[in-house]
Length: 510
Image (tube, rainbow, N blue to C red; front, side, top):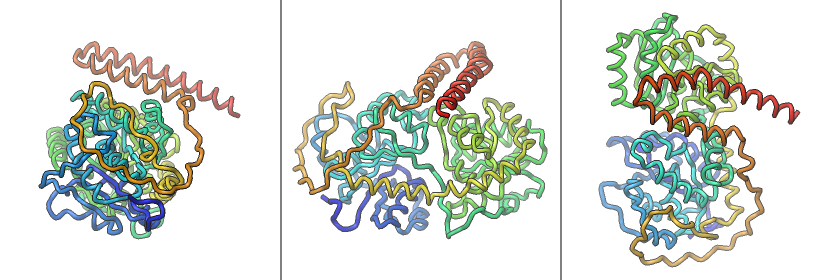
């Protein structure tokens, strides 16, 4: 077992990705630059010979799980030996992560998203280490789990285990507040998904013509750029259909990303609609080191995510901050966090994107607005949204852990979620001796009473709306009436009430 004074500080991060999330690697690099030794345990590479992550982050040790061999059966910590949860069914790589983590003693174990949390907690309990839980999203709220009925089990597990983390981190304020409401934890620290500037580049980034040149576009063409994964839950089909209706003939929609299977489906849709290589263009994804060179060659960035799940509703995707750092004006759907960063900061337009006709009207309205003013504001704000500032916050959070006693040495998890039968007991491990550490400081407690009223009511109303939608979507006429009533009556009334409430709060605090 390691203590805070046993040589260099060490951290082991666990992530389910084959192409490792840039957030994970940037956090690891920031810690490495501060003197930590960081190991990232990840899924096998997406194809043989893939070494992009290793080549771009040589200062981080990356270990790929050996899925070609069965994982060794290792005893779980005593706190988990009376609980019969089939971790492998919920999280396929659980035993591999746990076995690999125990090979690498660390001061801090880090779970990047819920699938790694049980293994990271078990490793922390075995070694008396600190545990960090970096929640990249409201993991159980993904549409896949809503459809398969596993949302309840995943929520129960997160509610059970998240309070045992010494530090919880997430990606934006709304998700942090939702986690407080759901799991009764202190407010998670927010680390934004900002991009790092490679090779010491300075801001503002000079614009280029790389997309125009690669795609054979004329100089007058105005590129509306989507970059990133082509998930069909991100409203990309709606945008492709909308391009038939856009009035400005110079606007073209460019999709740049690596998802070849979804790329094929979207290409087929564009070809069927007669807009492929006329109003809609596809460009293969590029490495993170090259990405911003291509981003700056667009005239605007697009974030069309629709309200299909809570993660989309509260999203702040990587591309949001990539667009800001590139100095691009942004057209985004009318969602809370996107509003916070786009309209409220004057770098673009938020527009409801419920139908292709809505999207087309939004695109035309955006390019008729003062796009140059949006661009100037984005360039002015870009220094605030590079990774370096977030990296300093990450290092400070980890350093602060060292002044506390790990929860793994202070108490054990409470009862497992109800309905789980006891497991066959396994041989307990000898508990490690507690190291000599300074007493933990008295820290202020974040209570539920300090969560904004808007977030409490917003969570309730959102889940009610999703439930109503799921029940009535099979009855199209009734669903259309309900949707019209919500959009035409409820939503405007809701916004008017909250606007009055915000003005009242502002007067009170003045």
